Image (cartoon, rainbow, N blue to C red):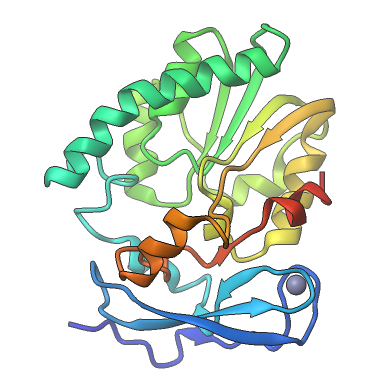
Length: 238
Ligand SMILES: [Zn+2]
């Protein structure tokens, strides 16, 4: 059953990153897991950003994540794909922790994971010696993460109150493409980094073969990923 979408979406007249009005339709993708709605992906002629437009408003997008099958927010998600995901996660969270420790000069320190989901990476980082802080907007995932990590996990409102220059590493593991206010969010996160510290934000790249193929076959629920972002664009913002 499609979700009620009346008055819950917004049409952007300019790029949310560079403000260019040169927007061209690139792709149409159906959300087959929750709403069954079809979304249009537009590309900015100014910076190359691809994003869902129209898109659900920030106040209403939470409903599109309310699925028992969405493993990033629900540790009890079943199905063969989710079982494979969980098996792979066992190894990938360890590789991620090793990576950030290496990139931090082999030292542990203060870590913020923005959009920590159910907290697997955060918990592994804490047991490796990192002093961790997690932010997660989804209430169910946040509760799950707090239980797993053994400490409170903050909601999205905490972003504006982060102490300046206080983190050695900030991570957003496939989170930035779900963010509505890209520039503002990055500005606030980068202000919370210590001078010379690192911020890591893996996200979909428009020309990547795998991403493009998945999107065209409709397996990617683009309403959840409001944008795909080129590394070149983001690197200019480092
Ligand atoms: Zn742009």
